[in-house]
Image (cartoon, rainbow over all chains, first blue to last red; front, side):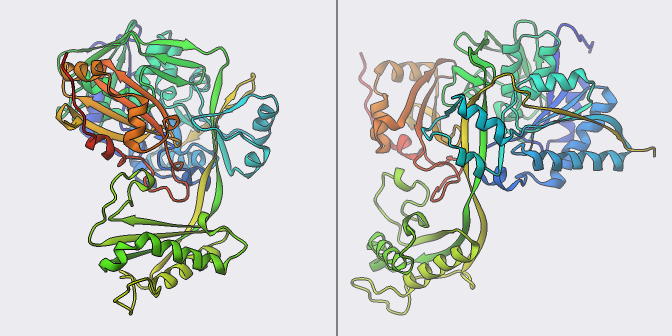
Length: 459
Length: 106
């Protein structure tokens, strides 16, 4: 196959999230297509605020190393850049450092030498406070106004970078680019836009490629796909005979994890899909045309921050007695009141939560059904300012519930069946989102690039 | 009838930590058009199905290219917050799946 560098731009997306793995055969099929770029998304806010707050990755070190070893070795051999967006799951300083250390290890172990670019996604508290003073910050999908206190309490604050910081790294000739928090399509689209391809099409292609084969059918979060960007459209190509793209599978992916499929907002502007067409080609390929990039009047970035909410302790217990099950809500409320009396200074309602599996454990207040199963699983969750306090609240609630003499009780030896002893589990730090806001930018240099020449030595 | 009669996928998922989005992918164009033109899915109806106030329903959008319906509501508890029961929001589709309705043919 002839490599037409100027007329098309090919992006190989190995997997939906770095560390989710991919079949080697699919990857090699992708490399045979002579791609111009290997790009992968490294993160998401989907697993909740814990990882952003704690600085830990939700992906596994050995799995990320495996994926990156294959990608970097192939990228260097083919002389094409390898780009990772939102390293370490959340893209804050410790996540980026963790991913960079994995890359350095790979270089040492495989004697690889290359230029690595690290793009920071952290936003300083001072920058956010200045924006707050200038009225440049607004809540996103909620109505909680940001305060200086919330900024100070945030362990890490990151912003989703657009394509510009990636373009800077490409211009510097970085062969491996690791980025902090990024708007998912940026890692895939930057080099193409730099080479003159349409921004809207490049971003829309990136939007689909960042989920790799999830947009194919059967969908998979751990298989490779290829995006072929053309002058007036782009083509998605499966790299495994097991799956194909269809008009519906691709169009349906536009819905995934988004509130409005026609308008996809990002840093610097939005993608408008109102005039989009999806056409099925041969061999499981689909061509997309008509996406329009609409620059916003006031460019903004999405800020994310997490703060320590406390410490968690949990107990798992079963209930089988029909007398208790019939009156469980009332019993739990009364036991809560009893525990509240031990801690008059705190609001125990915000500290204790019981998930009632077999009744409304999965849906909570959204559960429309009022019936209960013949046995209930109780997951008791206590939140304390310290682990000791969480353990104490959990322990008191558990022991009080175990022996609570409810109305009509027949079984007086104990109300709960515990699968374990000890029954209580100290579950550690709990984080919550403290910042989820848009920040209008004001020509700040938000995403600095650090270049590093890695010398893996000779064999 | 229920949506399972005309749709092959009915699902829920987070759209960011504050929103829950519900997708219905209809079997075919005809089923989609019939349902859409019946005009029975509104923000008010979505609120009723989920037992929430209508101001908690962000949007009801028909996405023609995928023969799809998308409903987005506010999460009762932010993802990962104390008391949240579904971090990914992936098991909140049941009321929509069980909703019973009649399509009146013109």
